[in-house]
Image: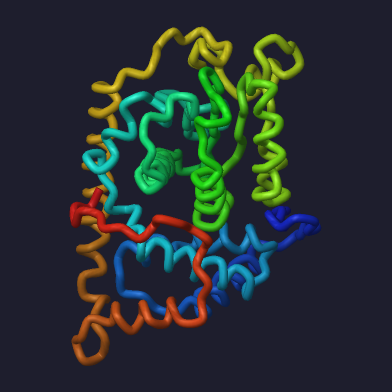
Length: 316
């Protein structure tokens, strides 16, 4: 029995590969990546994660290896697993990004984005909040689902709302460090002026990502069918044509995210306990340094700006 996966490379052809061949590719890529003693990185290098990077490169082990080493290098610098609510609470105040309290009909986590409600000027802070939201969205995926939906509301959006630098960084982070995580991106009621912005942004997106972007308009019956196909209208926010009158409420959302922080902290604690003894080499010395050197050598990192920052030691 074989499964069909699509590459996220522009112009790439579909490739059919059997389960046995998939596992062979996963094992081959693992050899390319080598060992790493950090529990967080070991957790990141799961079979499911390795498979996503392989699919993003059409099962080409060498290309997937380069991509995944770059992602590991980014995670070592950015430490997304350590970002907690207190780090990004200010960024969240307006509800410019939040996880909906419902999923779509496929069980995918829904991230609501309202770029018109941008409230800070720090590119670093904005990307940190995006990464925090991605990590928590992934943590809340059902066991049989690995992709999410982005639902973007353009109310109050202007060309000045989203700096091009942050947009490029957002695209780089999503495509280079979270491949095969986006199932669908809905742009809801984008204004005419967005067409000019889209022409600038579109070249940053690879072919498969562009195919996942859908334009939906509240006054267009055909595009509204997309919303009915993807979401339960009873649960969907009224701002997107649904019947749910609930709006973003900062204090209650803060409580939800702090609970998520606790859950993620528990997950990391369990992983740390299981891998406590594996971070030592044959001489009983922590092998993180040598492993890190192997990941950094000869590896190009994703083109991220402002990502070198310190985060609290708390496991968020």
